[in-house]
Amino acid sequence: MSNVRTLTREEAASRVMVALDYPNAEAAEGLLRELDGIPCFLKVGMQLYYAAGPSFIEGLKKRGYHIFLDLKMHDIPNTVKGGANSIAKLGVDVFNVHAAGGLKMMEAAVEGAELALAGTGLQRPLIIAVTQLTSTSQVVLNEEIGIEGTVEQAVVRYAQLTRQAGLDGVVASPQEVRLIKNACGQAFKTITPGIRPAGADIGDQSRIMTPRQALDAGTDYMVIGRPITSAADPRTALETIIKELVER
Ligand SMILES: O=C(O)c1cc(=O)[nH]c(=O)n1[C@@H]1O[C@H](COP(=O)(O)O)[C@@H](O)[C@H]1O
Image (cartoon, rainbow, N blue to C red):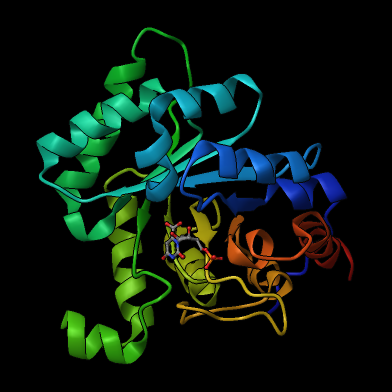
């Protein structure tokens, strides 16, 4: 059954997380100038964070942006606890770990973030686990990574483990949103990259859907990078996506 939704322009924009995959702060600021006034979420990943650092994130927060810090932590529990502690102090709205790190590692991420905010009255960021990367195909999962079964089975298994660990949701392809919500409940968040407007270059993604299909599948947030950042006119590209989400 399709999960048909009607959104205002603002609601639609706030569900789009624009991936700032840039080599430095100056390049990212160039895009932000173009998108000025559109109330979208921003995603900062490892390329920009490793170059621009915590001060860049703090600066974006001061300017009122909602930030998903995508550093995909995957390490021993004690190290992830420390990482989560530092990230939570930056005041980001969302951050992520890899579900492949296991139950204790994910629990440690929650502990680290809660410890950072204890006594501040601040809300802890949403903590999200990556299930199977959206670049991973069925063949890659079985033959390279060595996990048996279907991609859907692997994703749902990690989603259930993520929920058990007390995290807020998962990153997955929009193709798996219905299965995740059925297994973990409607309140369990899904953040879905692998978004390609009709006719857009797929690039290195494998499990994709259009923005409208992802919304109708019930996703909470969609991460979109190159279809916006590599467009000749990024503002028009984002506005077109927002329009697609608003219109029925
Ligand atoms: O955690 C993520 O954001 C992520 C997980 C995943 O499974 N697949 C995925 O593409 N991403 C990120 O989502 C963004 C997708 O970018 P585009 O393929 O350019 O739209 C990139 O910044 C990726 O790092």
